[in-house]
Structure formats: structure tokens, C-alpha cells
Length: 175
Image 1 (tube, helix red, strand yellow):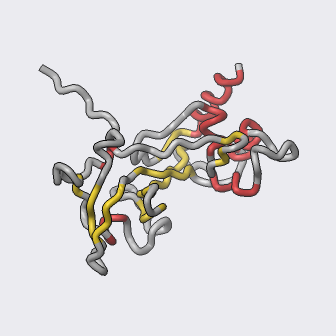
Image 2 (cartoon, rainbow, N blue to C red):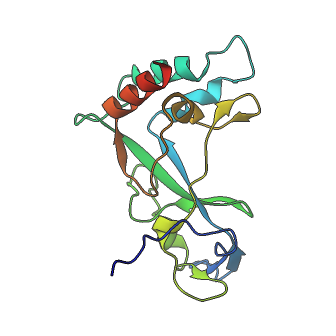
């Protein structure tokens, strides 16, 4: 008998308690994962509602041509952060952080391991919801142009994505 795969925490399951390792303050909130693909903050300079600004497809093409967007192996790094709608961004997500992104350490360097508020079971970081991004009038998420152009969304804590796969996905979406 095989065990069915675990799904993303439901809204009812996504309530956590954890405390600051520095002050001892206890937090009670929902958690999610927020990601940034290398250089996707370039969209900060544009507004999808402005007809004079590039659309998602044009931004995607500009982004793919940016020097340094990919590593030598062809992959584009993804940076992860723990977020809460109750209190906003907290810290870099555990297990995938680099010194350059979070020189003071990841979430677990600052907070205890979150425990489910009802069951007291420890968090499974791979089941946290990933914040959905978009790039259209009314929703201009940093890097949302990548999702709009390709249909791609990363799996929780995915460390990188092949640039060639994103380009092929964008081409398929416009074919």
C-alpha cells in the first residue's frame, strides 16, 4: 500500500506558534513561502497598468537577456523567504539560504521551529503555500511577469530553474 502524497497545508491547518530566539516573544500566525527568481525585482520599475510600460512578455524577454541572470550551468537561482499575512516577511527560508541573501542566517537562526497551533506537530516546510505571483493591472507582484509569460510556479524551496525551460515554456504559451 502506498501513502498518498501530502498536499499544501489548508487554511485551517496553516496556524503556527513559534518564538523569537532573541526576545522569547511568541508569534501565532499563518505562514507561507515567498520567492524571488534571480533579477526578477527588475519589474519594480514598471507598472502593468501603464500602457507605456512593457507587458509581461516584453519584461520576460528583457529579463532573459540580462547579464548574469543565469549561472554557468544554465540555471537561475530562486531565493525563498518565510512570510505571514499577519506580520509580513519574516526571514529567509531555511535550508536554501545563501550568505549573500541572508548574512545573519535563515528563519531558524532567529526563531524556534514552528509548531502547529492545534496539533503541536512541527512544520513541514514543503507543505507551506507558495504566494502566487501575477503581472497584470491590479496585481503587480515582483517577478510576476515570469509566471504570466510561462505559466511556471516553483515548488516550495526549489533552489533553481533552468532558464532554457522557462524560455521554452514562454514560447509554448505564445504559440
